Image 1 (cartoon, helix red, strand yellow):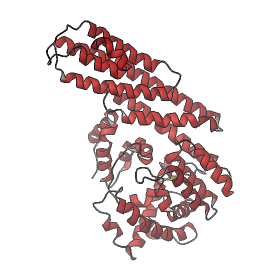
Image 2 (cartoon, one colour):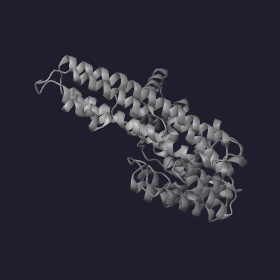
Image 3 (cartoon, rainbow, N blue to C red):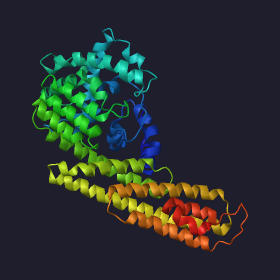
Image 4 (cartoon, rainbow, N blue to C red):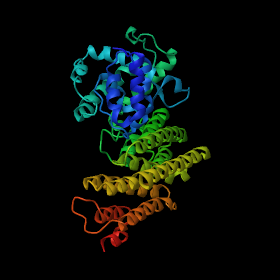
Length: 427
């Protein structure tokens, strides 16, 4: 199955329009393609958010996908990989998976791939039972090829020089050996305490005293949980106590990936929030909370450029929220309420307006968390509340129950500015 240019353009437009709504369907389509080619680039911008759990996207289980699950945060496009990086180019996966698949077919786990058909990657049984069996077996299979064992013909054409591919085989074998601990770092698959999960994964990586393995595990932990308060410090202290040296490289790569992910997320939330009346804003609030935590930790960072990048991202997010709230509350919500009052109803329309008002209040609180000294969030809500008060003062008394009036406007004022401010309309 392949896609023509028109279909590809349609999918690209769908993701640009409402990515959160349509990503799952596009990912499912890409997963069914025998040869992805350039089509895989459609979902590439969303991979960091999918890995970190910010975007939930159910995916069918397959041997290759389950094989890479423990170390997925390390995978990058071949063009983005540089010698010396802790990451692993995706192009190295195909020959590894081919080798593992061939060897498994001849052993006691020959039915493993068939057992995965019709299952989702996030199924607890797949993650907790099938996964560990695969990871232990795959680690044993790949380890000799990290040395001098002849590469089997099944691997096909290696997309890089052989010594480099062998180094990746050795790295992946080490990672798969502690697959259970790495899976506990995935918030989309487990409910583990983040700090405990990070500590256990680092303990497991420190056991063989392999600095390269330890730094890769540190990078995975930081990509997953580096936005949480204290996690970067925990990683630094653990590395120091384990005698495994400096992990600033891992911390830096993780921060760069996190900042890039949040930059895209801010732009996507802006488009989504401006496209329709405010409703479910949980995604935006979660984004702000994550960014606020990162801002809280930025003073611990040694790199001035990264500190500046995070501060700039915080300002950009604040500007986005101010733009959204000013339009959604100061313009759209007030105009909509005025139109309902002038048309004499229906009263049910105010239920939708109340939903938008509550969403605006949540966004304003999130903005205050991001910028505690900013006065504009309260100012935007107060201006809208004053507009509703003024509108209510001109509503005639004694309206029938099916006509919206002062009581309905008072509910909007109460949501935006508190019950005391709504009292003049109820007196």
